[in-house]
Every structure is written in structure tokens, then in C-alpha cells.
Length: 194
Image 1 (cartoon, rainbow, N blue to C red):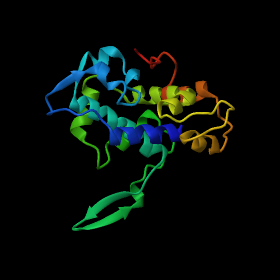
Image 2 (cartoon, one colour):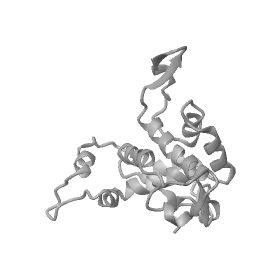
Image 3 (cartoon, rainbow, N blue to C red):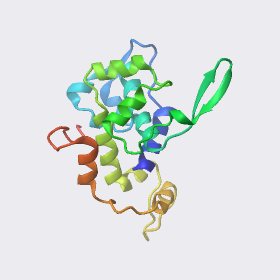
């Protein structure tokens, strides 16, 4: 899950769709190839067209999930000098809705984009649902990156990193993971919503 969160957050940082200005809209369906887990936002929330603030607000959620799972040292400025602040790291490594929401309140996230995304009905749960789905289907994830497994089953590319991850007793207990992150099944509809 951590590996998929890292890759998704990197994609959000490198290759978000471009908008001419803050008021331009683009077809929502255009985002599916460029924004990780986009199809896990219900269609009635994302609508037929989206604007930059909605897309960027959602991308921040994906990046906040990565930050919670794999904390990094933050940089802050004390007067005119940059200081590494290890105390700002989120203590939880479990990306619950609460932990991700708290992370989004930290410096470095555009509060206007986040507010816009949430104001239009977007939820942290949409990105978490996408992350869980993508992790369960991780072989498909490597295929999307152009990395996969040879005909003989041996891994290459990013799949090697995935195969080298340590095993955990809760591996393949996705029903439990889903419940812990998103609550009872009826609370959050499971995507993708194509």
C-alpha cells in the first residue's frame, strides 16, 4: 500500500493536467488517465466538467495520504533561515480519514484548493478507496507503469521493488483494511465509478 501511495503521489506532483487559468474547465473524463484514483470519485461529485481547484484539491488528498503513510521531514522557515522540523511529522502511519484530514491542515497544502474540493462533495474516502483498490489490483498498477512480470513470472522494473517489500500478517486482508480505513461497507461506496 505504501508503494502505491508513493507512486500515486509522485504522479500528482509531476503530471497533473494543465489548465489555462483558475476558471477554465475541462471534461472530467479527461482526468482518468492523469489523476490517480480519479474514477473513485463518484460521477455526481466530479461532474461532467472540472476546474483546476477541484483537481488540485483532490491531488493534495492523494499527496497527504502518502505523507501520512511515509512521513518526510518538513522544512519550515524560522525568520530568514530554513529549519528541518521533525516534530511536524504526523505520528500515525495508518492513513485514516482523520489522519489525512489533519495532514491537509499542515503548511504546504493550498487550503483554497482543499476547501473547494471538499465543498463540492469530495472526500478523503474517495482517494483511500482508490488506493485500496489499486493495491489489491497491484499487478495492474505495474502494467500501467510499463513494468510487470515476464512470461516466466519474474518481476522487472518497479515490480521488483514491490516484490522486495516485507510480508505482513495482514497482507491480503483487504476487508479488514477497508473497514479500518473507511468504516462499515455502507458508509463509503466502493469504486471505481466509470
